[in-house]
Amino acid sequence: MSPKLRSILPVLLLTLAACGGGREEPAQPTEAPAAPEPAVPIAPITSRGTAPSDAGTTADIDFTLPSGWTSETPSSGMRLAQASIPGPGGPGQLAVFYFGPGGGGDVDSNIQRWVGQMEPDPGVQPAREAFETKNGFRVTWVDVAGTLKASPMGGPASPQPGSRLLGAVVEGPGGPWFFKATGPKATLDPERDHFLEMLRGVHPK
Image 1 (tube, rainbow, N blue to C red):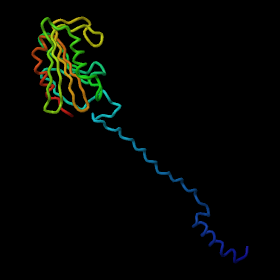
Image 2: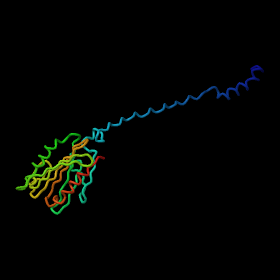
Image 3: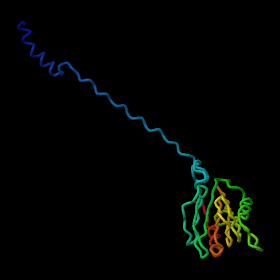
Image 4: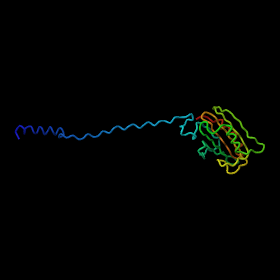
């Protein structure tokens, strides 16, 4: 090795050391930013205040049960609400039905069907009336006393003499709704006015 090369060799070695020996570490891969979650579309709201897929499970009305009536879990999917009615003749029951806007049949058909579920006492005629509530609903109701007929469609297994049926169709935006109270006459007789008071208090949610 020539004296000149020997003199510059240390300088070359220091330069290579400062540069990492001429060897580079491979660059670490950079993670791509996560793609944003796709937006979940909001279900359209109907006039009932619920998604269309929920039709028949709820409705945008509220009402207050009379004092002493006990709310129960509905026994079928056809019932919007259900309550037990206490009284001296034994418990009665309130069932509220809703089948979606315009569903469930017209007023006259339902009144006639309810009357047909009873065998009125001799000399007793079904009483039918209608009124408008202060909240803008129209209520048509019927009162029948007699024997509640046996029925495989949610009725009693055997005829029930000494019974009373109070039925009402409540019409309004998104309706109708159907209220039906049945039970021993001794129990429902003093609850008739409370039933009507409940109907007068029906209001939008």
